[in-house]
Length: 130
Image (cartoon, rainbow, N blue to C red; front, top):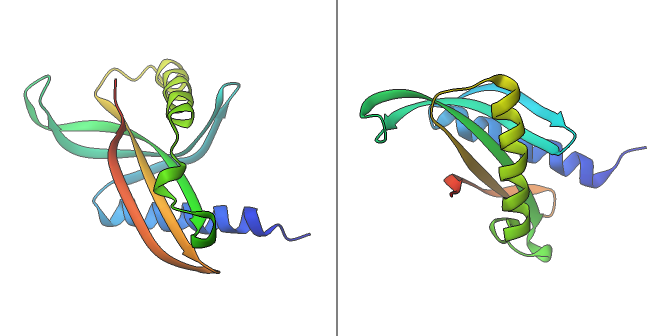
């Protein structure tokens, strides 16, 4: 049986992966799961790390993808404080399990649909802070 929500989610993740690649990020993995939840996309970015003073540091980027049809509201608005808090928890699990010691951040990609068509893909860097 074909699930329209699942199909929309898969389309959104694929659009997000393309947008991240176009922005210069390298997608390393997708749909990483742990008991606390899931990370949609795990990527790598080369960017300044002002904390360490490195001009070209290798960043681990954990990405949450959210999608909405216009009739349901804004995809960007679907990043609620509760969802962002959950992302921090899942990210902590990934960082610990991967033994990552470099800089990392949580980004978001909001994918807006109009009917079956994607009309906007917005990459939000450092979507979760603190």
